[in-house]
Image 1 (cartoon, rainbow, N blue to C red):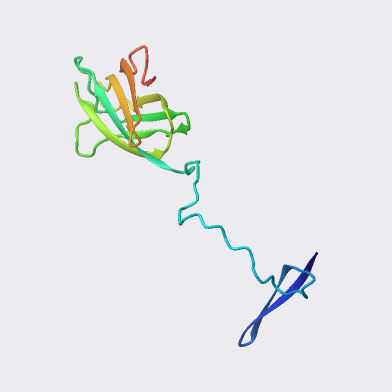
Image 2: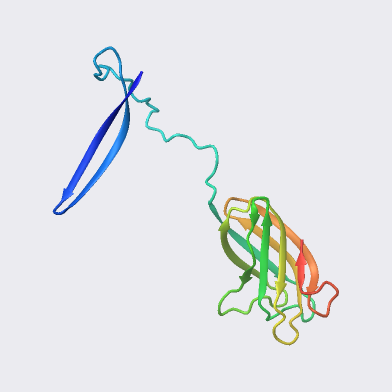
Length: 174
């Protein structure tokens, strides 16, 4: 049988008095309402943290993105290039590939970029586009390689132009 015990707490401060009332359920027994003499001790787990089989929902991963520009004439671009990664756990949203004070996406270049994001899981698609700025902004994208700091590796072959005067246009997805 459970009885209810009301505990009143009064805290005073000069002219201001704060009062709160807390209700606590206390077990009653035939021993006159006294606590049992030997309560159950907490379980000992050997000092180990409890195991949590699921990873935290907001864990982050750093992705290394390798971009290979083709060897064709005029394959490079000075346009601003954007990429979006699609994984089994979500997508990254569009972000810019740029190394400050460096000429990105030159003919035959193999450029490296880093992006930290929520864990996207297995990368299944990548999309790229550019803003078509500057004359001759067309870009021949050969390949994209994505690596995660958790050991994942994904390769996406494009072998195509990203240009407004090409049939494929300014966006490519694999």
